[in-house]
Length: 124
Image (cartoon, rainbow, N blue to C red; front, side, top):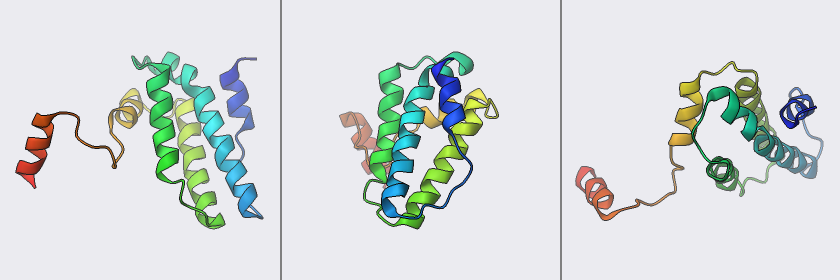
């Protein structure tokens, strides 16, 4: 059985974690499922991204919320991530949805070039 089908079978309906450790494990499982789904996403959405670029994009989203420690917030974030991944794996999203996800930069990145810095300062 291919790894993408295994990843889909491991997804579960919305759960409420009993402890904070259980919620953290659920988030780690979501991260692993995201990484395992990359080949499926590339193949079915005909994406021209490297696996490492896609992996870094997934990682940046998880690093963005690494300071969240409350059980309820972790459950909420995991549920949102699981439903988004399930929709993408089930081909319920269009190619443009997936491309927009990987094209947008995380909020905390800095401008790449001097001209980009100049434009950002000009419009502020």
